[in-house]
Length: 419
Ligand code: NAD
Image 1 (cartoon, rainbow, N blue to C red):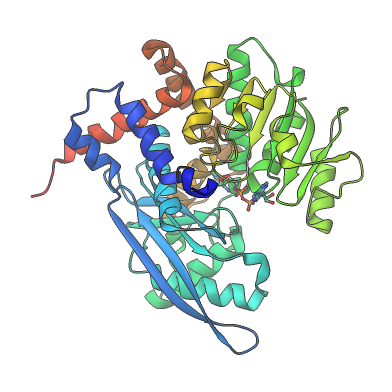
Image 2 (cartoon, rainbow, N blue to C red):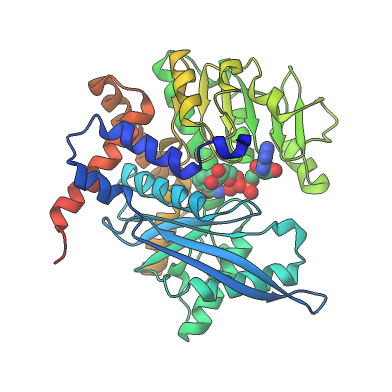
């Protein structure tokens, strides 16, 4: 059997994580099945006129995993490997992440199987507008609110907001978050996920009597999450010794300046050519002898083959689902502390929630207010997860899942089953 086929899909990982956590809850099997099953799944095949005048077909998805706690929330991914199973997994993770942060949302995710870097600006715009129109039957500020994810950005969110608004006949800023500030985006949104990664890492280290300024860090992925997390940790005194992206990585035992690295990436398009360090591969980065490893690229990057070689004592999951179930077990057995994605990278959805609230009220908060509320929500729920781990004598992922799942189950109990 080919390697790829043997590997569990992200959806199988998400289901396995749910079932592991469910063992620690008294949930009847029928309720477990309800909570595991995506509520609705839309697949769209749609045409885009390319710059050469030819028509090309694309496939997109939008999955609502759960609407129990409110309208659905979740990003839109543009990546060649996007498929239904991946989107299902990401939608389910959003349900637990929103519940863990106590936000009034269910989980969703969407995506298009495309390499956005292969498209011209005009092609990207036409693809986005057509995809937004195709999935608009599911969207709405009170129904489903997308946000950026891998391969998408505020500009793309602006086009989605505009497309939806044109079809409605009036402006609907609250239909999407992560937009440019000029059309109802929130201050602090771009930094939110990376800052949250820093807060949860700093807090975890503190509980073990360690300070961020005492540790070395390796970051995989230097996009929105990885770059901001690296900068936030660097500002707190951590030594960022290695960073990588899809083209490769760079290592400097004396520490890299992520702000300078960002300037380089803005010009060169990759960290791999940064001159103030030695080139390394992604594999070398993931198995590097550092205190903290921050996988902030894609899911499944650490599997059972790589896990035994991982030397970091702490893993902060900036990405969604970066560890396979098998890798998770191997690393826990080795005594590694893993800050789970639904806690670690939840800062983005928290500030997305603030953006939605501000849009609905047409009243905008200051950046200080946003930072203060983000920190409060992240630390409150960090404490809840830490306490749950102690009470149930489980790892942080199981603690986060049990908390999140029980919050959704409680909401389901309160709503009942129709009819
Ligand atoms: P991004 O597109 O801004 O950056 C992704 C980075 O990963 C880039 O540096 C890219 O080069 C790198 N990358 C891609 N494929 C790679 C590979 N095979 N090997 C090594 N590096 C690779 O995306 P992002 O928004 O930073 O998201 C990264 C992860 O964080 C994803 O798992 C996403 O779901 C998750 N996440 C993002 C947010 C957010 O607010 N953006 C919130 C929560 C979780």
